[in-house]
Image (cartoon, rainbow, N blue to C red; front, side, top):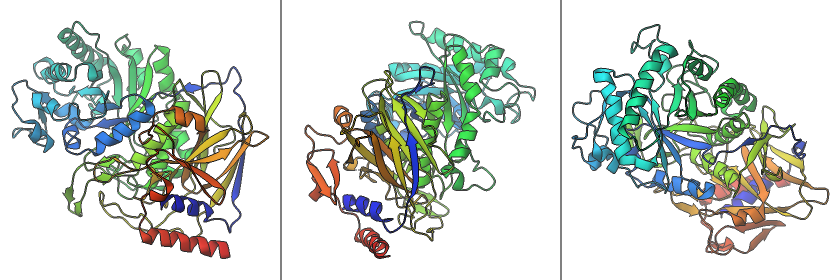
Length: 580
């Protein structure tokens, strides 16, 4: 059973002396900068032509429902990417909704995306309630005074209505000059009149509404800015008004379009923090004009990701560290890009074929990283985040979560030490890559935290866990799993209960390549949860460890079994370690 697996994994290093991390969390001083956590901290970027195909299955819809239940708000989806600057729209286009779901966009497409009214019918109302959209418009096509952008905006306004939050105008316009879409001297001051013209025309389409925009969307990261294509640059050029409440830039830490990429940087906190720290001036520029900053398109590796990197458990851990650190420097949202066949996607919605073989729809580890973050964000009031002093290094990172009265609510600790396993080394949704295991026993770290919490309080401890950082399957959040068929919840989450000690301290063990969230158990019960029913399940105790299954219909005895192969391998490993 999964609970047995969880406990055995915890015991698997009993024969070794664990490394230790001792940290202290003090109530923040008045001048301590605590950044608020946006409920849509984890958001999504999807090519506009791909959303109908995602709608063919329930995978993305059910993932969205699970996430939205926790955060008590709909998902934010940016419909944008390279296809945005190839898109045209016609109210008389008669392509059926079903054809859009098949990937058909008109015989005349020739690399372009031609949309009609049934495009919106192909996905509308198929996702979790209150899903909100950002639509990226075609800035490259200047024909008939940007008819492509303006006509598309008219369709979006008609069919998405109040589900639309923002428009973007142009995708990665800092590349236009180098790619021949504009003159080589193209800069933000040349972009401004075109951008303003389109924005003004869109506002005329809906005079009864105040149309809002996200400006920026540049491809180059903050440390390789070209000309004035960053947030300080475009604000100086004149991109500043009440209709621009958001600015964004894109970030892919590794390029999969060419060159070598590796899994290692995903598990290096210092590498991640060094990259993201370059965005501090971008955040400051946005905030200086009363706006907010988002990383508007991102993922592990560009050009649809890379199997063996983007589809691994390391990517799930990376997502958690990424968004939490980004939040500490003021980044409000991080939009993870997804395509229907990309190994960096949270789910693969369809069966598909590549030269390397045939693959099936399914769930990838990134989904579990997103779900773990939704548990962090689950609360009834505003949450604030900061890094824990002394709790960050190359192999680990930690964050404390507070409320507005500066009461400690949650602790997140990530053990980013690499550990590779052959268990869960494949996933039928993505191509196979080399399966390899670390030679040593999986290391464990004993974490002791001095907290301001009152002694005797019950705390919930849940883990983002998998067999190894390179594993592509068997990932879960304390037994919580999603169906590979439709994304529905197949196994309920199990809280491990720990007690605050007399001196206010808590201790827990954390395996290499694992993350933990600690919070008050009473607050877990107060918040909505995808699997929670009207009453809580009874305690289950094994070797002194108390676990409580969320959802009264799921008792400890009737949990889903793992395959015998996995259970046997874990038991054997545990016996060997206990004897040694």
